[in-house]
Length: 169
Image 1 (tube, rainbow, N blue to C red):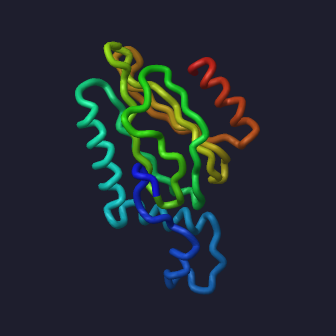
Image 2: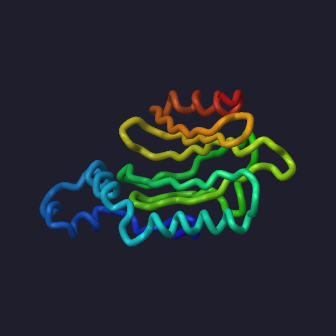
Image 3: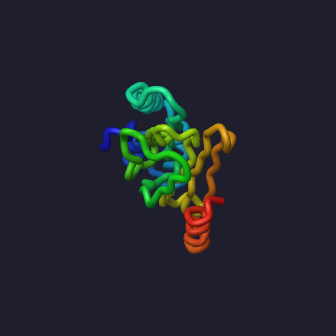
């Protein structure tokens, strides 16, 4: 497991050990529901938050975005690409893959000496009924604060990512 991914994956084997799934055909939706119900199990959420707070402490003062992602899609999600409008990834990389039931954590920071804040998007590929997802954020003095998540079917998704990366909208 990567050092910025936390928790044990929720797999078919996990569900097979639960009485309510005994003899049942297990689906991606079943795995997703169990993962959602177990998002705080074994302090995996606490460990992910502590990791990103430690990154922030190492980084020091200045605008930064502490990012925590939880995968409850029923399958693994994998990193596709990212784009920075303002700032850059901090001292640790984006998680490259998060299995169902795992937290990923990273820090995005402002550019030193610039008053622009932290604004970026990261794309993960995974199936959840709608397709792939784009996760974006903005944090800074001139852009306000916000987050968004967008999911699109695969073909339409490629056009969406192109417009986000090229035009920043």
